[in-house]
View 1 (tube, rainbow, N blue to C red):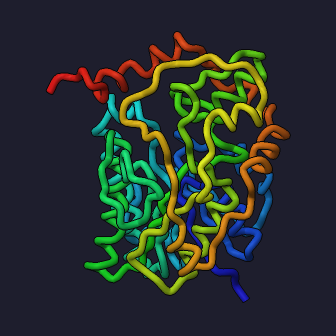
View 2: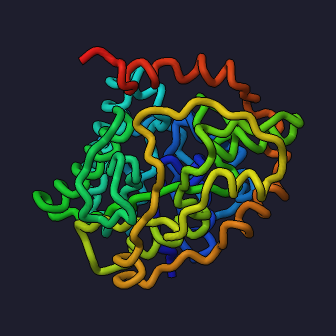
View 3: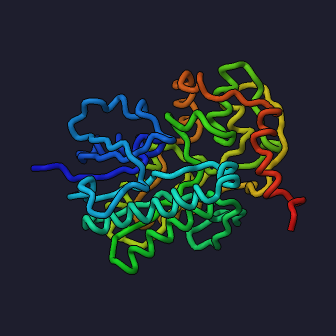
Amino acid sequence: MSKPVAIVTGGAGFIGSHMVDLLLDSGFAVRVIDNLSGGHRSNLEHRKGDPGLACYWQDILALEAGTPIFEGASYVFHFAGIGDIVPSIERPIEYMNVNVQGTVRVLECARAAGVGKVVYASSSSCYGLAATPTDEGHPIAPQYPYALSKYLGEQAAFHWHRVYGLPANAVCIFNAYGPRVRTTGVYGAVFGVFLRQKLAGKPFTVVGDGTQTRDFVYVTDVVAAFLAAARSESSGERFNVGAGNPQSINRLVSLIGGDVTYVPRRPGEPDCTFADIRKITTELGWRPAVSFPEGVRRMLTDIERWREAPLWDPASIAQATESWFRYLGKEKVQ
């Protein structure tokens, strides 16, 4: 009996590679699509030689309806795209092109192939400076182009469901962390920043006073939610995925251990992210399994992975976030 087929776009990335692991371990044949602009082959090295894995190193913007990559697929998990706040402020056209038009191309390929379900990776940043806890019906208020592009991609998935009958759900990810979390790129990924600073014996650059809280959710819990959303009978639904238990940055610092230096708070960032996860726990039976202390402990056992990550200090952070303050700050031109 042949294995069911699942496609993971962005499958060489942080969350995508963990999705690949879960699917292979669950008996799927997996086809990865990734242009390696953000992902890395090394994220899949441990699956090398697995007969159920096939990789297609290409851009989602090059996908055409009818491509054989999508033939016979039961599910498509769509993670491919570009992230980060500052580059989206500086290059909004690129973000709209990749994250919106790229999503449309994936949807068209899935529609042409008769895929059973598309699960779109949405972002809690779509909610903006949200009231907490934040449920799926909260008003949408993107604060920067990245968030807008993720919301428009989500709306495209729902539109293809309504108009063309393509089954699709969205999983709205809050603050995912875990092994293989991004280690390069612009300033912003707190674990990559802090673990590199710890390796170098440098103080942690804490934004503001560190009392801001984030709904950190471990990556294996995230991908379990995606599989649950694919297997569910529901379609056209958004499901929040967080731990439902926000943790302060100061708490993170205490678990990692080290000295602290402070950098200015950034406009457009919430004081708290807090996922209301009642919908996914009730409708899909999903619950987070990895506690925050346990997740951080697992990260620390793998700390050498961050040895080559960028080493940030207050001066380099100020330079990297200059556009952020210029366009999102209170003194911007009206």
